[in-house]
Image (spheres, rainbow, N blue to C red):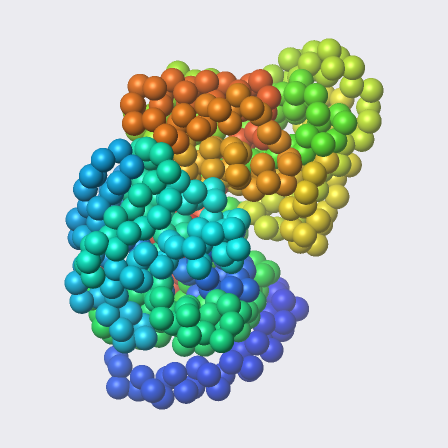
Length: 517
């Protein structure tokens, strides 16, 4: 059995443990009569805000479904099947109107009964939809088609969209569509106070929150979906993987996130531990900042894509545990999945031809990476840089301390990224990430007018054949002609856990510890 030497990083988080001991003791005393177990989960990152519409990084969003809820729920284990949540039924009134019946008697964390006013407020101008709302910018790629929400009566609302929206039902079951308490939001002394103690309807409620340190959730016993299986869940931020593994081995953590593939056998070598997870609904990508004079030429970006041997990366760094992709799409798209599309391929000779056509003269191209944001990020980056240099590129790889130097306006470098499929439709994947109003678009990283015009059709047409033809052309642009990025492989999501814990993750990067459905 291999022994972990992780004393230094463990020491860093042990200080946090002492600081929160009093909080945990108080919670334990308050729940002394509760026989349900408590769960401690070590995550790579905790957010600095619990307001779900403010954070778009998946690592920050992992715990949000534990204390919030959606009108329409998604069963990620059953091909993204939609099922009732805070809404019991929904129906189309016309091309731009969806009427929703709300579940009666839903008790919110503040003891109030949820009404149609809470639902309308959650999507309304004070929180989301006006230009001066706190979450206006981040929400545009997710909720921009929603014009308003009208209250019909206390148990019924109508969603009116700016144009026909073929994926509105999916939007209401995905990121940023959680319902919160209107009254709690309005009585909070400041938005800063609100985003540290969000009041919603989920199976657990916020007890204490120390941004970037720990989040303690306690059971919301009045939860409409049944009594939660845990009396409390404590999320602890432990950035170093070695410290997360050491804490799991020592029994300090019950579950840890983001286990690299080269650490799976180590975790499994302990008889009381096991690995859960696999392919996720995210893909890893490499993104190009077209403001760089070399990267401005699409032939150079095409050459960079052609020089990457994706299968070698999956086989060598992931042990074949994750799948390759067929371009910027997911099989979950169903009839909109373009099976005949030819995604990125490995062709170093063609890459050299394109470099010569573009007149590449050896100018250095910056490649900004983080040491360990994504699983095996640095080794992957080093392998890709070597592949690029093998065809003649001059790559200046620069390891960054954080995202602040990468997520900037007018970027002029290459960097790592990921694509989350937040709904099973290209509107929730490639269009949300690279289209009009996306973070890529807002930062002026890449923009293609034909792609944006096609995306507007994709987002508004109710004709499946039109949507398929439009998406097929969008893939041709983004994978082969004017590429803003290139896909590598499906991102693996592996968790370490105590073997006796009956918990199975879904392909979605959300930690679901609620009652069984």
